[in-house]
Image 1 (cartoon, rainbow, N blue to C red):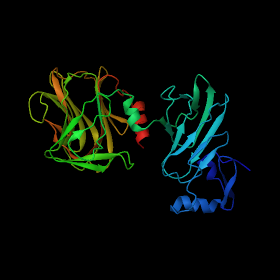
Image 2 (image 1 turned 45 degrees about the vertical axis):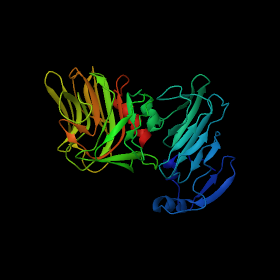
Image 3 (image 1 turned 90 degrees about the vertical axis):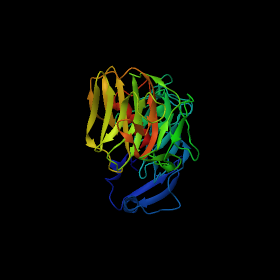
Image 4 (image 1 turned 135 degrees about the vertical axis):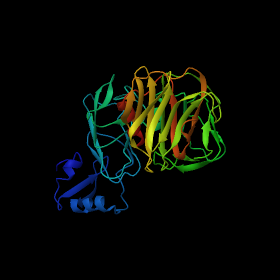
Length: 363
């Protein structure tokens, strides 16, 4: 019997070939013709009562094949692995991925020596290198990522607002810094969120009075990043504003992120107003993730993980001001949904690889 190791090998099977499905103890659970399984994949039909093979088990050397993993399947790695031990696994249908519980072992990857649960896209192959280095993923094109919220926490954000509130006007800060914000004006809570699972929610801003204010001020941040997900069909409106006023209004302002004719703009005042603009529009009614950075390397706009615009401007106006989400003096109020807002002042995502890691976690 030949072991099927990935999707590519599955597609080499002939219709009458038997696919043998086994559990973690290598006991045969099902023998099905490949034509039956293939039709199931293609049609979305149900082969109840089996949806996937063991949602939680101890991994061994043999590969595990999981069918229709609509939620993440959890694999607990062995507590005392041998050097060179290999583990392979595939989720054939569904987007849940595979959660890896490292069982006290270390993981060598994009975030070295992390011991907590991670999620890998599949097919994937792990090899145990040593007790010092632990497990690592051999496929460089696979992204090993923690959950989106843990990825954001790694950046030590000044504030991280997940916008999952069920009622009231207080906006919780998930950074651990206690910088709770306040919903102002026309805001609708508990909208479907960017991350796609039921507990992740977003807020809808009405485009005329709704935004988020913060009581804490920031002194002239020339090293900072702002990231959020947004969805809109409006051609204008702001994702981020920074001004001398705690609430909306005029006065000294800069460091603004807003839509203009559907394109994203990032604007600072550096002796004169400098505005960076994306070549494409993003008011198509779909979720997009915007990341802007200001640092000694200049201004950057990333959209959905890709660098879209940059220049060499490295500073903005020098004053103490307050951030606003969904409003700026130049761009006005935002009309659409916003989710997963973060502002970082020291450890910022400076390249597309890090931002792609964030997006992999949110996929």
